[in-house]
Length: 216
Image 1 (cartoon, one colour):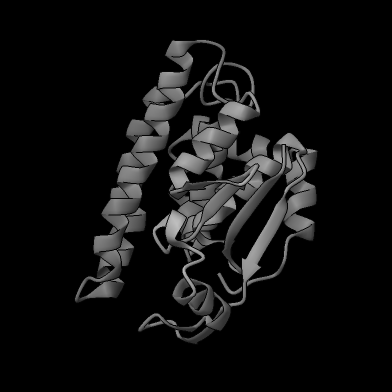
Image 2 (cartoon, rainbow, N blue to C red):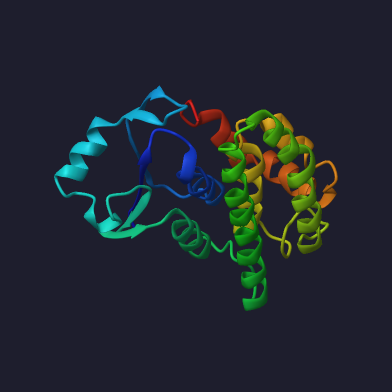
């Protein structure tokens, strides 16, 4: 089975899927459109190759968006769908229907947290909002999330699952202020066990050492 993951040359919405590939030790084409940041504050980017392929109709199967996954000439759009597809393919969705549902629910909790954070990013008093997010709101959310996580270094069951990778990516990759996001996990020992375990996996260590260096 030939697989090609298409995104920009940044971590962004494709990084969790790349981590899944790395942990599963699966070969794929990591296709990256060049992306030049002009002004991060206003999201001004230069992406000529992407824009050309879009205007030429080459991206219609993914609704003119990336990331998408190409599997044997079939296009699968939407980052979360790609993550679930890969996790299912590589046996990272638990050992039963119940475990699968628990894994999926943890991933949806993380999606809710990310949605909450978007409001913080556009707050009028951004400095105050950010401080409250990392010291109060995120701490509260992660403390509640603890109730869904195993205490053995795995979020569900006893094998590495999609929710382990999603949690790891969320805390270590999603936020600009990575020190603050890690500090928010101090009251969540089960979550910290998961993050530390995933971070120390040889496949993850290798990926972090060898992945392209990007702005975000």
